[in-house]
View (spheres, rainbow, N blue to C red):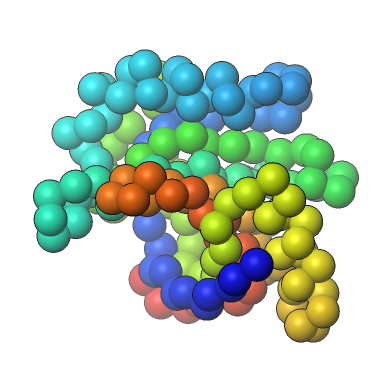
Length: 156
């Protein structure tokens, strides 16, 4: 696998929130709900220079909303399926807004065993997760990535 280090300042996402307590397949159900009602948040979506959306994020957090990794060996936590928005955007009724802290990430293309391979790579390199892992889909290419936070950044 190929890995890249990227820094990302704090950013906001509006989406549909769920929990592992909702059972197997809850993430897929959140994405289906978010996608089927996307027109409600599309005007709030952050745009990039070519006019497209900045990105679609599957943010994760521990149950206490500390943006820590999922608990119990990555089996218990919260998930937000949504779109990156401007910091001052307000979530419409039925939607939730999360503001992710700034991190330095180890980034890899998503795949069937990308998560476990990246965790092994982090261990081999003597690195630890500094927060919850995020899913990201680049609207320009359609490629999916996973962002593994390795250092929390100070700043905005």
